[in-house]
Length: 314
Figure (tube, rainbow, N blue to C red):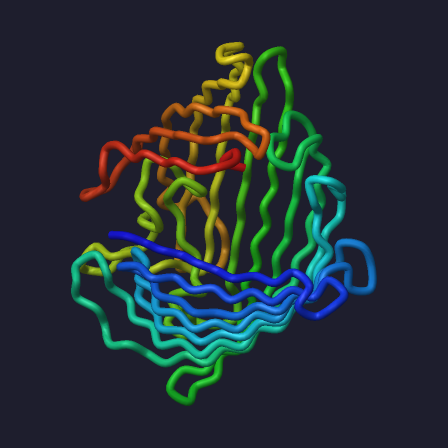
């Protein structure tokens, strides 16, 4: 498939520092139009007030969705110029979405209309030494989003909770890096939660060696259905080679993850992936190429997966 994205931005459309941004996406798996209004340094340095309205149609591995969404957020951000130990954000999100499970087999379930109101909150601590390429310290981020969802006249209340922790230790020419993710959605049965709001695992930012969102419960056709809890672990050794002026590193890694329908994060159904990657350091962050393979694949899982992106995996 293909994906084309374009945007127009005026950074002082609403003086002072009031940005207007128009964007559009055209692709085989996503089509989007959106408008964003952003006020920088709102009641304090690096405090940002943002309003975002968009409509999109998307086809993910596990579901299809046609969505209209409005969000308003007020947050304190970290930047490359002023890396901050503490950041936070509060927001309001209103979503109207028609969603259906089933993509891989080509057989989609009937689309269901969900109407969602959410209050997303997040707080993060960054004790690392570098925003893009950390070598020491640790990070922790907590996201909590109380939500009310309406499906066919039935109202459901639940909360999406996710904790991410990562740590970094320099050992000579090697940086050891570890990551943990725990998530839970208590409050209602999984069928009352829109597929796009559930937890998934697998892919370059999750468990390498597996396809995007392919870890976890599947239906009778072998399609991922998502879950109400997620558990992930990652371990990397970022080995500096001294080659190419010291810009090239070799990175063996081991990832593990599982998704379950219960609300308690657990080790049930844990999938493991391993592999090796290359990092090429640039002035705007490392370029990452990882090649992974599943250690305990299920039927239908590919034996090799390749991921290319900008920045460290975590």
